[in-house]
Image (cartoon, rainbow, N blue to C red; front, side, top):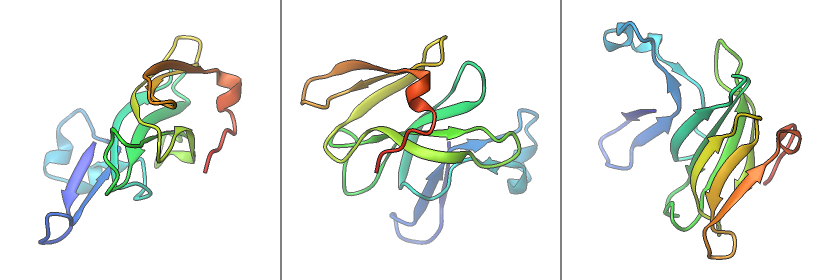
Length: 135
């Protein structure tokens, strides 16, 4: 995760999922950090890479909504050289909170959410993730 302040106000901040080189070179060279998500959402957390390395999933939300009020599970394709591509929402929304997302060995996406105000474990199978899109 990358968080950087863009101005003087406390709200002048941007957050993105980022790839940082493990050799420490980004400490002195900001250009060594690759931003993997755009500025679509104000808050992002919990990025997870799929078992085959082709997809990433993370949780996102926007202010003034708090994460316990409503979040979305975002999925993108790993390009290997730059930002995730084909980013889309596959679960959650303004009235549904997603607390955790993980990948199963078979490529299913596992998540904990509260679509009916009760926490539930859910599974999204790999075939449902391909091309899935929610507003």
